[in-house]
Image 1 (cartoon, rainbow, N blue to C red):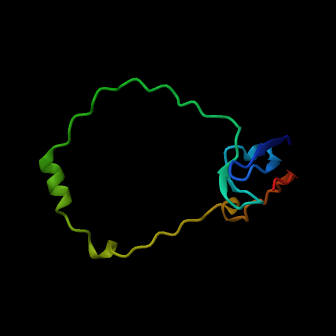
Image 2: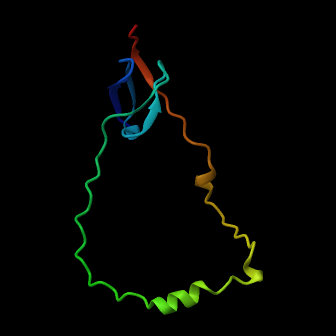
Length: 104
């Protein structure tokens, strides 16, 4: 894995760290102020999709009918349980930053 070299924009401390952290926000290990690690790829937004013909507007009378129907008592207070993948629950990976020279 390649390393990137960058300076803290607040205290000027020269740091280096893993290249895959470019674009992420970190706290400087010297001054503890947050900043975005420079570098990395910048995303280019995709070109706009061609416009499709507009869908016909819904019938306002039908919408009013649907919104007036109260929820049944059986549906009130229902809870849905979801299972999260193990990688979502895992501890975040710790990253090490090297202080190359100390500015005082």
